[in-house]
Amino acid sequence: MLRTRGTWRGMTVVELLVAILMSLTFLSATTAAFVQITRATDVAERRVRAINNARAALQSMAAEMRAAKINLLDVDKSFYAVNQTLTWGDGVDNDGDGHADEELRNGADEDGDWIDRHIAIWFEYERELFLGQVDMSDERVDEDCLFGEDRVRFYSSSDANPGNDNFDREITYFIGSFDDQDHVLLKTSDYNVGRNPQPLIITEPMAFDVLSFNMLFFDGNVLEEGGGRPASNWPPHWVEDWDSNGYASLNYPHFPLPAAVRFDLEIYVGVKPLEDIDLSLASPIETMRLSTMVTIEQITNTTGYDQLRSMYP
Ligand SMILES: [Ca+2]
Ligand SMILES: [Ca+2]
Ligand SMILES: [Ca+2]
Ligand SMILES: [Ca+2]
Image 1 (cartoon, rainbow, N blue to C red):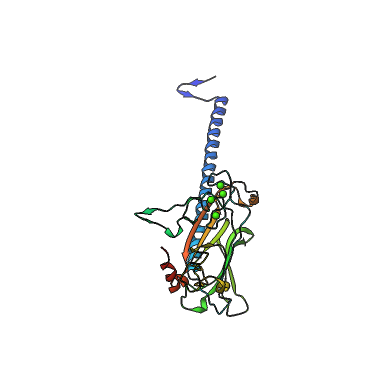
Image 2: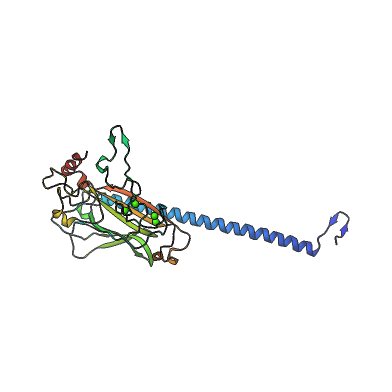
């Protein structure tokens, strides 16, 4: 089949076809690998972006919550939060106990498997107040939770213009839709609350693909009237709702605000587009959880709070 003319050696049609076929196979293999790498990079980039987004949202919420303030003579300048738990979570058995999403994110234990964890330092225990009590730092508390869509509305001083009441506003955080996209953590600011009956509301997205937004409030109203003894709801603990306008009916020292607020965000980081997933079916999905905690200075800077602290062992 081969023809030779001097040192020159040509190719038959068959040889040429084989060569073309081989290079085509090589090309398509590299293209497939390239597409796969690009896709993986896309997913990784999307993930990093989503996580950074959510982290920035948490930071911003914490800063505004820290500056929360109320005016007991003005019901508009209040702090109001409602808890809402969904009937599904990420569908994953995160703690490997054979059940998926069996807990509520509430600082308590629902499935009876918690283990009291306190580090002993000489004869002292860390978090001694909570020895024998369920708290969030114990093991298997809030470890495999249903999603939440909490909502909070509070009055806050402006970080850009501190001390200038004219820039204070009422802030609301909740999960809603923005530009036809669901699962967006939204913030609305009303700059006219307490000044003008017409609201002046600005809505902005804080983070996307947010599947769960949960808040907990640390309640320091756990003393009997006058403050001498612990009340029946001692020790101080996390609660799920808050209404500053009902503060008078709370235990002593009648703090109208929580001493601290804890935020938990769970965001979607899977490959399949979120709009193609029926979350209520609770099929396992990939999520990531971010949380932060902030103290509210209007409460922790008071003598009433010092009094409470002095009763901690
Ligand atoms: Ca579980
Ligand atoms: Ca789970
Ligand atoms: Ca548990
Ligand atoms: Ca729980």
